Image (cartoon, rainbow, N blue to C red; front, side, top):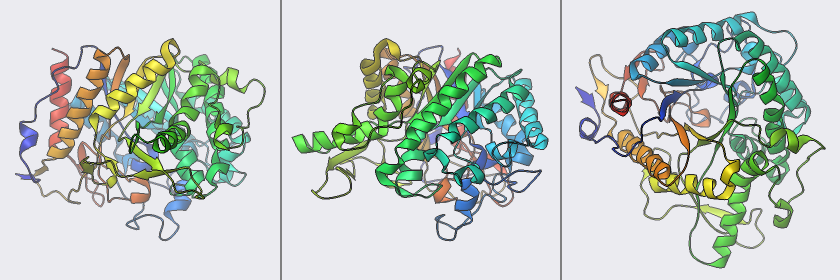
Length: 460
């Protein structure tokens, strides 16, 4: 028996144009799945403060008990093994390792990640951790957070601790997840933790996160890493009309969302944001030399394109984000239009823009949420046909980009299991496996079986 509106999931075709050699992965993040916020010496992060502030999380939920992967990680590893994943992307919580952000380490936290890594290796899955997936220690935020250059140095100290304890078994690392979202939403408009609304005063957070990556990359390589990169949430920017005003607005948005984060890594320079009337980035001598060329792969998280129109004169921003005409949407509504060909266009644009400076691309996240029940009765599952269609069409879009000459080495579904979706709480479910947030029970959805079949067929 199934829950769902359509039986398409059992018959939706697998993409036939995926070339051999692409690696397959699924992802999660520490704060979103671990739970156990006060267990075993864990400290507090900015997301603990955000969640505990009334009215900020849409459904008023917290991460307790949630998926409780801190205690149930073996079930998640088994789900990953059942898919046949090449790699599993998971988060390491800064405050579970260093409760105060620096200083005394928490051995219990390190032991947890050591057990997880060992379980993945035993399951013949490559562990691919993310050092920073938004859970900045509150003690570091109190001194300015990512607006303070010193945070990059504290991040290096944290990476030294983690790599010293886990680097003997991990050679693949993401350093920073989506610096654009931390900058623009966390510090710019306040819709994510730490909830600050600095507008363009948030831009130093972009540089300090890139600097943090540049400082940490050699630390990881010294510990034995061979594959170090970061991943950013990129979007394909589309002007609403052909007017010069909309084209200029789209260029401005592309600069702020995409190029500020990609250009320093791949060209060693920031785009000319002063031409947009913005202050220069707080670059010090030697910074860009650390950042440029510091990645072995470039991670691209992609969910949707962004359609832009020119803003009315006198507003705080030179652009407006508007609905994408004619596009279907995910559970987030018009904020997340579904346009798979935009992923192809984005990947081709990155390749043409940066040329030989662009290393192989990893799709670090791609997925969609749709309305689903909170509980699945015993013996039933969820026939998530819309998610399968989304994944199938976007994987085909990646294959189209590869056929056009883009070097994509890996594709990652967000996410392995349902999780705490930041400010949206449990109102949005992305998982290949359903999680009952009260009992913690995991139930593979139809999309889980579809992805397993895709991985199996790609190896024939």
